[in-house]
Length: 377
Image (cartoon, rainbow, N blue to C red):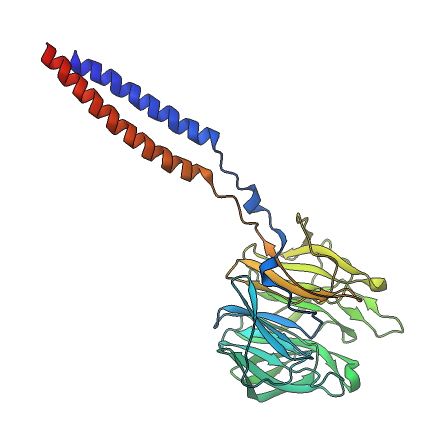
């Protein structure tokens, strides 16, 4: 009779535990919606870096583990880590301004090429410098003189790709040539077909998911009035190919564009549209197609805001930009919002501790009661 009574109580205890656990799982649902919808968010802790212009560039320095910002006129460098920008104290600083910059994975440093050489745009330079271990160092190779070129690291070939820019007096002659850089050597590329010679102010980023460099937008000033473009080109295996997506962002120049490794697509924001209007729309480019995104929040309209992916936060980070009358200095990030602390695992763990204690007390009381009943018989 005692064993039968104990089994009944044991079954009842099991049912109680199951009911409590079921109640916990039902009453505390896991809400992942906040973490699954990427959006723009301002990083207030980053502070204000001061006004940025098209001469301001940002890239991720993988060797040193932070985002690097290089700005010309006045020449300054800053790093971004842990949600904050920090000024870099430099031993020497080459005159950077309106060049091209990216991280060279093969050589393990940030490479910067070209620029105007002075705030007066009186000459173009082909100087190449690198940033490593917190300092800028001049390199022997000299590329083709230009300013405002675009640069990206091509993972498939292991080369830095440089495209376009301006040359000539006051930088009025647009270029559409392509170069690669590796191991201290610049090499011209003969792709056969290239984006239009008369166009400029494109946006460019390497698409790691599909192994090609993506070029979008720009302006064609071959006629009396500049025409804004909505063309998409890809560069792979030494060749440029014009894409034909079903839809495209509206024509624009100086859009912000970077590969978003967390979401697996090229991200584009804003830019300068016809009639001088700055834009604030967000697009993704994936598998050859553009898709307009609808983030819950967005920066104000702006163009030429430098942008790069930050592996430390798993977000695309954008800083500054301008709208024709205002030059911005705040920092924005695109990615998943910090989700809520998931209550289910926490409550379940606490419940298990409470239940374990209760079961222990229950068994002690039941054993003592059973012994008393046994002695009484």
